[in-house]
Amino acid sequence: MTGTNLLTLEQLSMAVSILSKVWAYEENEECSYIQDLFSLMHSLFSVDFGILNFMQSPNMIENQKSELIAFGLCFSLVSYLYVLATRKNMRFQVSYGRNSDQQHPTLQMVSDLLNSATLALERVGEEKYMLLNKIRDLNELSRKEVDEIIKVCMKQDCISPNDNIRKRRYIAMIDLCCMAGNRDQLITLLLQITECAVTILLIHFQDDASAKGLSSFSDELLPVLERLEHLKEDKVGRSLKLFHRSITTLKEMTIRTITI
Image (tube, rainbow, N blue to C red):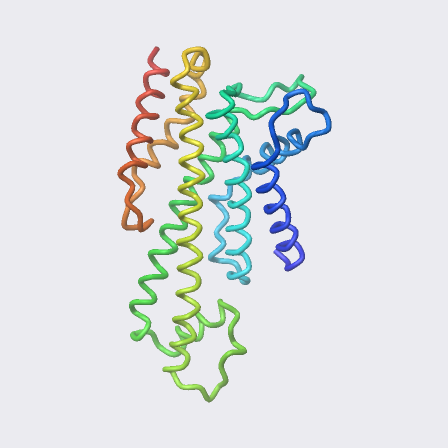
């Protein structure tokens, strides 16, 4: 992603963050930005961020920033849905009606985002774990291995051919710490996205009227919840006790819906 596109993404994320906090929901308000927000949700939530391995990109640092901003945008959008579901008591349909002139949030959309966040959590947790191991073992790495780290981080201009291994390891350590910090920040964001999505889904499963007709939807949701159940605390660096409790509750309700 180029610097211009990164700036555009940052501006979009900031605008959505502001609008989603201050713009009241009015279903029939033609002049509002609500339909634009819903349209953005439909486009963005269906993107499978989980399969995008930013760690393998030649421009790793910039792509890590892009990924963080993109998920920040997702968080602003799903937070808005969270407010609609919890404070406005709005209930979402399972899937988008193609014959409708207006777009509305759907449970399928929330499930898609939950799946993307789950895949990303697994990947980013592993990336952070590997980065921390590299930091720990940095003094054991050869000059060639250290230079590869510096090259991947695009910090070649910080060293000269005459610099000794100690300076090279110091620069590599700073780069690795920055990347690990970025991954840790993203993990926090992904957990927040996941918690919002799970809460939205729980509200609908607990609502007798909304829970009807969720059987086929539950079939798709169950594998995602099972993956979240296996998320390890040592990989994400967080206590997941309350998180897993919510996942287990939603999973039980999902299974109950399937068997009815």
